Length: 247
Length: 225
Image (cartoon, rainbow over all chains, first blue to last red; front, side):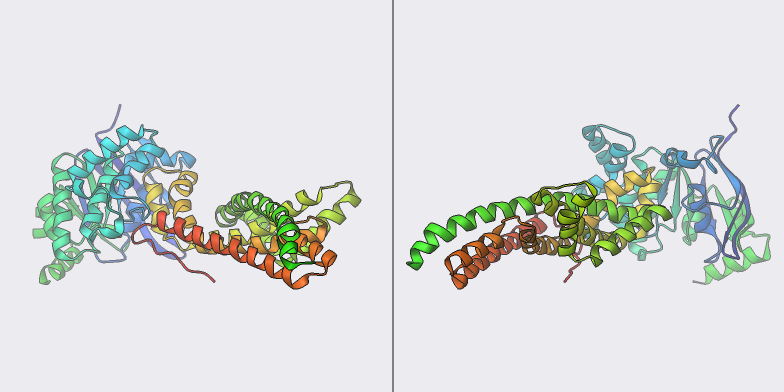
């Protein structure tokens, strides 16, 4: 029997040296949900995302995708990473490849897709993020917002079951932020399961199905956005939301 | 003897023969020196502790060992333990070992200059480390290493003359033989100097063309000296 959750995180712990970054994190995500993580900087939100696809190896705890355990799977990790997309704060597009090559490279190399089919798929994903006219441009020729949209397309091209967004708009100015958030909003609407670390409260309010407030490597409070943003129960959450609202 | 006749009848045919040998030495060495250099750079950068130390040791040894000494060991030393190499083969092996050590340093420097995010993003897409190195890291690193690698290639053209010390009559050797036989030192050495200059100039031009052809907007070439 498969569980109703596409992603289950059980009691994740991570230390860097003697600094405890994740202190027993557990939560579940259903298919199609958009979970937004908020909280002060340095509270382990990005580390949490990196522990989910094992770019950072957690010290303890378990990650399951569709009931398959991701943690401790050894070299099979690259199979799981194909199912878990990731979008980075600094885009990390491959500098020597054009936009369309960036999107098609993983389907070709990892999935052994025929180059012609991969190109077709890549163009489709670029259209989805509105970047089809920039297919032949190199990353350095794109604005930050355009680069981030290409990196979202790159992630989509692997048909992931979940996409992790690690502060996708933190390196962008407000105008470019908007174009990236629009794409993410469309994705959420299309039923993609998304985990988003962000400081964009409007996005959390309007798109999230669940908001998780983290501090000190722990989940302080979680719930639907209306509840967390309007009536936070925990004083720390209240303080954080209040501080953000001032800006 | 008339200088013109010496130049056209004696020196030029001799240099031509020598040039062919020099080109054979260089063109046989360069590809293997590059491949071995890539291997050592990757072993040093991504290998486990053992492999990484072996590669580091290789670099220290072959950078530290005078090339002439290395050639002597390969040509005069090895026969005493039962391995006899033809002079040409011994030269090429010596050159490859030396060339690879320097190439690997340029390549490793280029690999280290690539942002961590490139590897991270590749792995996040489901690439194994080997796939990420092949598809993402090496194509970028080799582009950045071109200036260093081409310098090394130019050195190779010039130090290939050391092969003469173990009896391979290449360009310099050919000039030396003719010069002493006919007592025409200035003419011979000047002429051979011009040939080397031409080789280096052609190489520089070719590398320049190559760099322009594979240049990618925004990927800055690191210069090296």
